Image 1 (cartoon, rainbow, N blue to C red):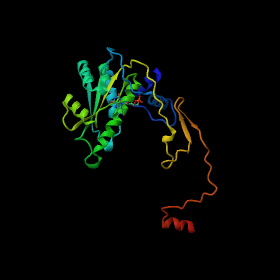
Image 2 (cartoon, rainbow, N blue to C red):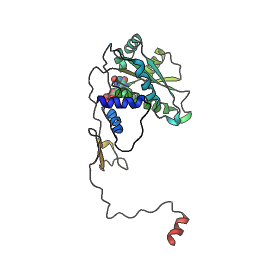
Image 3 (cartoon, rainbow, N blue to C red):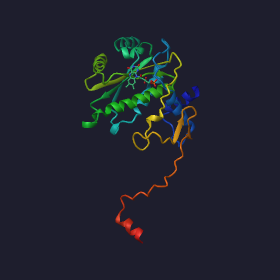
Length: 249
Ligand SMILES: Cc1cc2nc3c(=O)[nH]c(=O)nc-3n(C[C@H](O)[C@H](O)[C@H](O)COP(=O)(O)O)c2cc1C
């Protein structure tokens, strides 16, 4: 596990990893990092970590997220001051874990940079993608973190805007306390085949492949698909006059 963390962290710190097809060693490390992440709410109090060595890679991970029309409508507020973390933990009960956290990142949407019109709310998805990147990057570095929701709960949003002196157009989506995990965390297994619908909603039977989360091997699992004897050849769509000429020759 340590080796995996080092590998993923090294890849993140060095600014990226080369893409390779199939289940390579790199993809195994990345997948394992995804499968073993879980919310961490207790941190080793008073533990000194080199905050600056960790914060920048985490923020780089956050800013690497996809965003609608590449607007990157995000701002990141970093809190490292112990007293401020303690005060926040008092005021925001759903993020009380801030008390023992080494630092916190607040992911905010910048409405001035969001898409105009109907797509405006995409900022929530953009900032959510950035948040997940931060959570995964923290886990890859042996740190623990948890997404503590703020927006769209109005009371929390207003309270945090006031606490951080945010202008009206900066909306805090969440608080992410980060620290050295106090305990080993077991990830939840959320794999539910019945959540997968093949070709159309409700068709959950066509079990073709399954990902074994322990070995990360793709294995053939299910009923072999045999073509139906009664199946009629499908009509060709979008046939052009030129195609007709070709077939008539
Ligand atoms: C939008 C959102 C809001 C959340 N808010 C809180 C929160 O206020 N406090 C908290 O302890 N965890 C919060 N969580 C974390 C979830 O409880 C956690 O992700 C979920 O139980 C699954 O556990 P896991 O992250 O360990 O897989 C939130 C997660 C999301 C995605």
